[in-house]
Length: 83
Image (cartoon, rainbow, N blue to C red; front, side, top):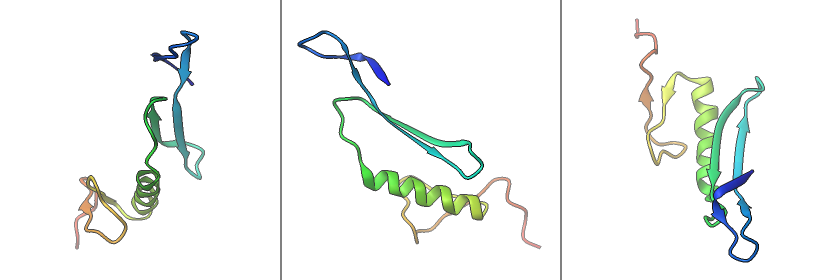
């Protein structure tokens, strides 16, 4: 993917952006992360997102910002009420 906002100083060409697409078993895009060419990637965040996607596909919960596996989760708004 080319980033039109990031221009190479030497050739004056658009620089490639770093894009990550996480595809679920149902072949649907579950997450996209786009980094400018000048920004490093955070692999810990990618692993956190994968953990969250897996958990929320198995259980009707949500994960807050900075959540890590084993941390507390949020009840999903559409979760059925406990009987």
